[in-house]
Length: 127
Image 1 (tube, helix red, strand yellow):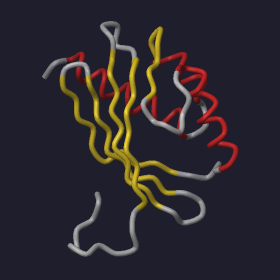
Image 2 (cartoon, rainbow, N blue to C red; image 1 turned 120 degrees about the horizontal axis):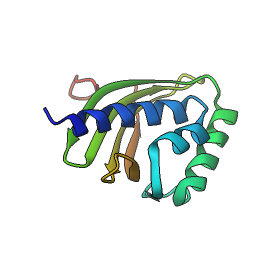
Image 3 (cartoon, rainbow, N blue to C red; image 1 turned 180 degrees about the horizontal axis):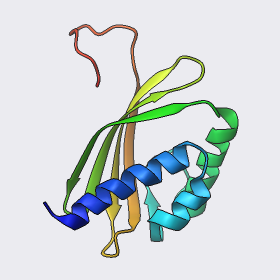
Image 4 (tube, rainbow, N blue to C red; image 1 turned 30 degrees about the vertical axis):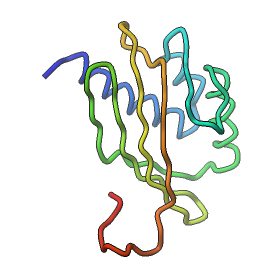
């Protein structure tokens, strides 16, 4: 297996976990390249927008958890399938996609998030 893909997968998980659990500045310093293109419409573009969003999230929701269920890498892209548990009992499934530059740094992000419903009409889990 391509060692760069494996490293990117590892770094995507470390980056997201670090930011999600309250250290977005450190996450950006360690894992983000010169630019950071953000496609989530509720987060400002660039590194500072990412940091501000996750600092606010940590302040408003300090006791949350994230489980990484699947990590998929192809070329310079990594996809994360996660299960988020929030303090008020809400649960979310997310799909995050990161693009890495030639230096192995994250430079672009897309995501989709959906609240986990109380029941499933098809009987299958979202995980």
